[in-house]
Image (tube, rainbow, N blue to C red; front, side, top):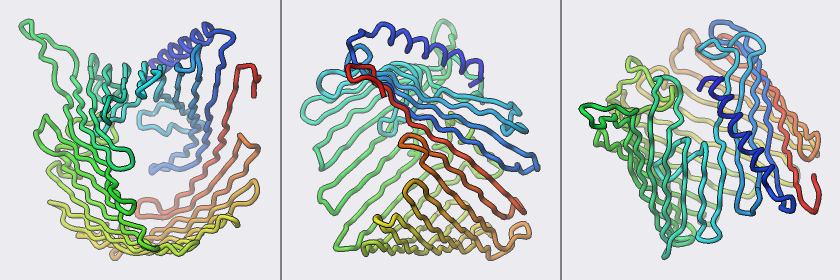
Length: 437
């Protein structure tokens, strides 16, 4: 989204909010709360450009707007480069409105309506839209949700006139299981041919999600997504936890992804890949197991994961970790070792990590050391490593200042130094008979 379009939408939503506040009855309580996160980063790009981007993330909500059932929610960010441009488009500033919606709750059945820019997460249907999002509980454990509007896309394809809609129906028994079936359809623009609408189906996805806990020591979470356009399954992901049995727990995972079907209709440049690097016909399945032994303040675990690539071949990742944490002393430490055994040089290495953490009354400090030893040199580098030091200080109950610095070397950077300063402020204001705070 362009900065001008972002400012227009932002002004519109702020104007709506101010109007709602103005028309709220003077006797009603208005709760206003949120968080501001400011980041100043210093780093160097691959072409030796000196970068210093500043980021501001703002989230807030206004509740009880004229009624206890009405609230307004906002989230957005902006970036400004204090030195050389950090974005690929060479723009020194950018911004985005992540969400801004009015929520109206019903008095029963967990009913709610979100109007505006909303984030929808209903089973396998996940989308950011400008429109409406409605959900409610029904009788006998059933629930239903529906959404529709204009999809919020990146500007990589200059699409306009799109529409998206979908929903989810679910059934659950409290503390035992929850199962849902969801659907999403997105159309690319409006086109007429011989008087008929021939809008292109850009995305059409459906699938199911499951949470099952038949016993306290057994929990299964998973979902399966189907691409109706390519008529194939795009992704399966399931996670099983057994335990704890005394001090022992078992965690099993299984995932399967078809690249061609999963990336068919990418809505962000992050998920558009170069076919010369990754074959679109590639499929990968992952099977993993982790055994965790909890000995109070000390935890010992061993894990194994097999990556089965249809084209690139197999890779095995295995190792273990030892962690230590004490709540009264606010101390944590850990070390781990893993080995990746794959078909290519980049996937044949040993991995080491050591870290420590200490929290004081109003401050904390973290040291983290990480190293990768390749079986074969990559770009002349046999060992890649990073060392970071981070610290934070609570200025008050609402404000925190933190900073960290990292030094690293890898096959792509002979020397890389990164710095980050972060300031977080939580604010709250109440307009009621109790006053403000």
